[in-house]
Structure formats: C-alpha cells, structure tokens
Image 1 (cartoon, helix red, strand yellow):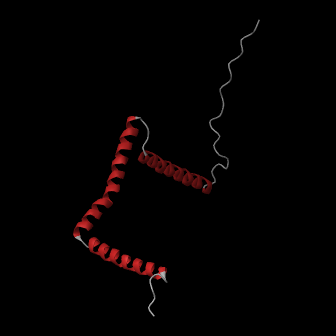
Image 2 (tube, helix red, strand yellow):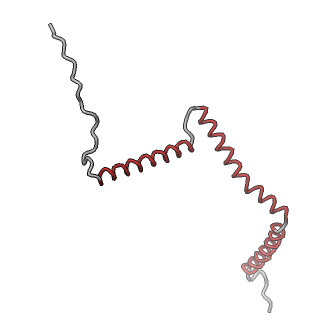
Image 3 (tube, one colour):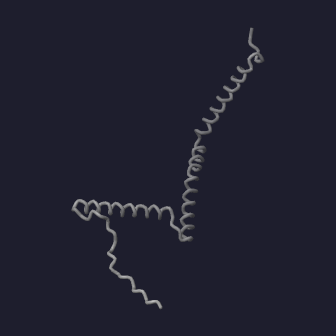
Length: 121
C-alpha cells in the first residue's frame, strides 16, 4: 500500500524543500559563474573603500579648516613623543652607567631674594 502525502506531511515538506534548494543552487551557480556578475561584484567591493577614502579626505580638510589636528597629525606626534622618551631613557641609562647623579634634576637653584617689604605706617 502506497503512502498518501496526507499521512506524512513532513516528508512532503522535506521533498519540496530539497527540490527548491537544488534549483536555487543551480541558478546561483549559473549567475555567479558569469563575467557580468564578477565585474559587478568587483566594483561593489571597491565602493566602500572609495567612500572611506573620500570621508578621510573630507575630515582632514574639515579639521584643517577648524585648526584642529587630524588623526595623522596625532599619530605623528605620538611617534615623535615616543622617540623623545626613548632618547631620554637612553640618556638616563648612560648617566646611571657612568655614576651620574642618583637624584633626578630638581631644577635651577633658587638664588633670587624676595623684594623687601615696604614699611607700613
């Protein structure tokens, strides 16, 4: 006795889903294999990069007009500051190796005397 589709609705659903999936896969493979699709996808993938570049250029001009530093300016400043810190560490290490001052430099000596107070009265 043959099974009626009404006896097993899940089997009917599974069969329809399998057929639909095979058809979609075949159609997708045909479309994605074409040169036109490759060209469109290539152009579409470069669009966000172009937008990012234009946004960066716009922000650099805007920040320059507002007399504010750009990201590149801040990065360059950080690199310069890092180089200065490295140089200071090397100088400190060289002074320690030569028996230099153990105390950090406190500044120039205070030799200026305060002005005398005017007599009151």
